[in-house]
Image (cartoon, rainbow, N blue to C red; front, top):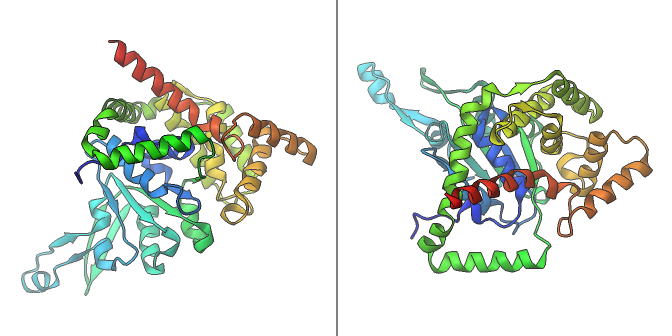
Length: 348
């Protein structure tokens, strides 16, 4: 049945990517989520699974061959000129309002469409003008992109608009790889039955996201948090001030999700790699392991190469199935929290 998508809660591993998407759903002002990695790492499946935890929120996919009118919408010029009536026919951006706009292989998107997305993302306003007739409306959405860096670069201006960037890797643990096969085959065999197996977990996650949105602005941001965000951005030598602002916003969203009253420095350290990954020198087009190693040293404050290497080794050894330093620890706080929620719910 085409109405059933692969459940978000049924995704095996990929906790960093799932956490980043959750934070974007809580606060789309974070500026979007970019998933980067080689083909076959289930980036597209992961994004599409988001719809199973979205409540009355559209998920719109932007095809690479889309025209400008299909993206922005169009104005009925004939009715505008003959009767003075402006009739706007919505496009993909308008349809994605307050939801998710997904672009697979975003680095291959036509430049003029990138410019439009940049403008709407920066201003929060969609403007359409045809033959001197114009229409504008407020429009906020979560922009989600996925890409394989080996297939081409992403313009720096567009890259910076993504608040969070998460490298996605193939799962290395053999048990988890078997579980991926079993779940995918079970889903293809009976989509409705498989979807229902994870219905409660997705429902609890959806409710937690909605609750986090409501408590978001009540989360306290301490001076220590702000100072640490500034330190990290400065130590990473990133340009502008977008990085520290997004770090604080992402830490606040994470605190709201975890039902914390205060966004702590420890939560900031969890989200910092996703904010810095595409902004630190080397970024997307260096080895992900090297980039994450540099970010780990920035967070820890290690200055000499021996200390950095030691820290990196310790982080890698924290998990027996991850190739990326710190990756297992970053998302697990969210999913450990959800496991407790699900367990408590089942006992009632």
